[in-house]
Length: 138
Figure 1 (cartoon, helix red, strand yellow):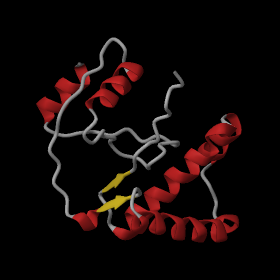
Figure 2: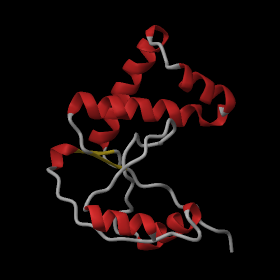
Figure 3: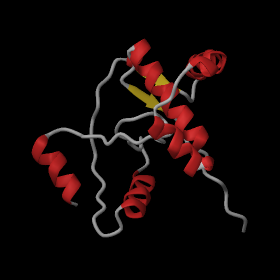
């Protein structure tokens, strides 16, 4: 609840950079899914979670929608370029240590770096992606 009150008081969302943010660094939202938002909030802050609603206005050209073929192609083409250049790129020591200590997070780190670069190069302000919800067996 403390974070929610800070957001309301300051009228802004403040993101924390993480080396393995899957969709790049920034603030994450659940679009039209308050149940998922509540689940996530309770998982991350069981004693202090809160769900808020926000209306965010962006031009369609400012959103990288990975649920569309166009958005997926932007990511895939940049990712191919990234793989071609990867051997020529130097990573910060912090990144190398994190991957060494957390090898299962290597793809998340790479995706975060790639998406941060795409945002910077193409001027995107938001990224959308729907996560698959596995069906329970009954």
